Image (cartoon, rainbow, N blue to C red; front, side, top):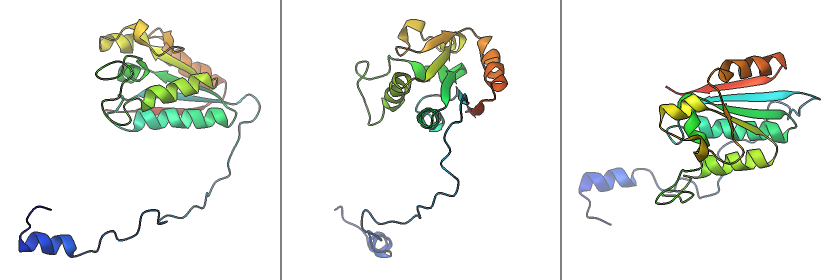
Length: 170
């Protein structure tokens, strides 16, 4: 370790580390609400207006939509505005599909799983165009949509009585 002065050493040793060994339980595991499953015909609709990797909003929305799908809900995700960038198959560095940092492909992989398990993913063409992204760059199975579809998709799922999760960043 680098040479430490007296105050640095004092600060470093004030609290013993690790305070708890790895694997220690520090949070309870009691689930407060019932583990609901979808009733016949129920839908879960997620709107995402968050940029990939700029916050956890987009990734958590995909995970929640996947969980709803696995609970039996008809589940759909709609990316619009800057959220459209989440649906790009061209993510990666130095090549598409590669990860320049751990987790770079989390959203891509999760969306592929969501689609493979029966979820629908929509992506606004205007959102893509705002950032110079091309429709052909979308993850396979993502359905491109007209800008006016954002509102009508919301109306469609609201009329079906869907649970609507709207995430927004900015």
